[in-house]
Image 1: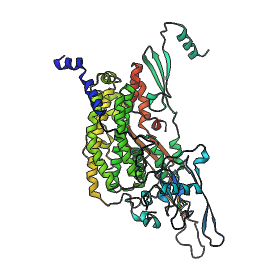
Image 2: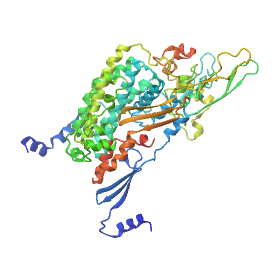
Image 3: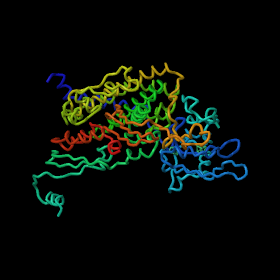
Image 4: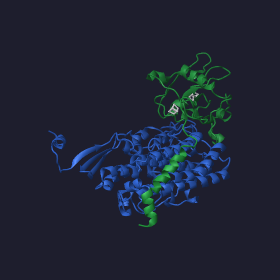
Length: 181
Length: 410
Ligand code: SF4
Ligand code: SF4
């Protein structure tokens, strides 16, 4: 064994090198986030809890009951019921429910919705004591939106409402000129 | 009394026993990277026979895919190898695009390569973290997670999710990147090559690490090919086979990178291959970012790409013009959504060769989809690799072939 080899073996050089690295890290800036007190800023377009957008003009949801989201949902967790207004023949959304426990947070629903009525908000801290707590009906979904929008800068625009770089011909007409709320 | 019980009783009552005895390792063992159960026949501390039992994470992805449209199936592929989900998505999308004859825009191709290579780095970092932790190096684990977190943050900026990204879609990608993401990626590619030596200082020459990995589970090149190993596990045995090079897809043929190869074929060699690959992946991301600036403003979705909302069955169109006297003779024409046929596309994911074999009958959902998962093949190679080794080395062997049970059991 060469002299160098003996030297390394006896004085555990490589271990000392490793220890010096960890020792240096003692004084480096910590990368940890003290979670409940401190929160990491989320990127825009984070796919979190669902909400139905409350239209600032009408104060109601924007959903037109076209069933696209329910059809595209791979987990089949959106349930919609509609009926026709007997006089104006307009479609009324009677029931709009999302089972958040089955959702896989793919974002397909907000991407196909032609009027941007549904959105996955940048809010992830929610839990419930029972399955019912995470079964959102229409009122709960609108309430989710109210809870979420007060934390945001207005106008709020979700990237999935008009995905960047998608040619306009591929988008439904209302999505092409979608604006923040 | 059952024979196993007899053996246990004998083991408890007698001082010396010379016949082999049986040990169950897993399914809830932290070093099995999921829920793998290994049934071991031991002679003292030497492994006589090892018998992997799989299926604890079976979700029936292949069967499920027959009841969803092609666009929805892409989300199932996220859940195969959940550590590198972007790479799986790309493989699946390439298969469907080949079936449909779609041409993906150049910008989308570059973005896909970036996503793939980011997934490769993230996967190798997680592999290094857990592999080192299994063998006993705790610090590397923390450093690797620190850097993986950065990549996950970039994924979050790109598409809104951290783990199950579903970033590509059939015919392109879901969203273009913003300048901030490109800046962040530039920062990452600058910084990351400086981080790799940190891990290497800790374990590369560490004598405990070397004792645990050098000369363990040696597989020669011929054996590795016979066992069906792919990816870094094969390249650790000196076979320079990389699908990115040998069957280039996306824009890999334009990129300048080296195929990482080591010749020893032991656990240490496989570790070296992955470290080299991380450096190469970093180089690839860098080159792609430079290419990306040349395609500013181009669309990221093909003109004739299918919508997310695909029809499940065939498209039904009414007959173009009614017959002047008889009205509609045929009540509608059925058009295929995806051309009939079958296709096999293999891509190089961090674990090895991931293949998608899709049979289409013209409807909007696969008639049959079969996934060739690298982890499945690698698990079947574990018995051959660990025979005659010590029990403690088994941990190193499982770690070195890099398995993810979500992909193996599907
Ligand atoms: S995010 Fe995906 S799974 Fe969840 S409700 Fe929307 S479409 Fe369904
Ligand atoms: S796609 Fe939009 S408008 Fe149509 S039903 Fe769903 S939420 Fe309502």
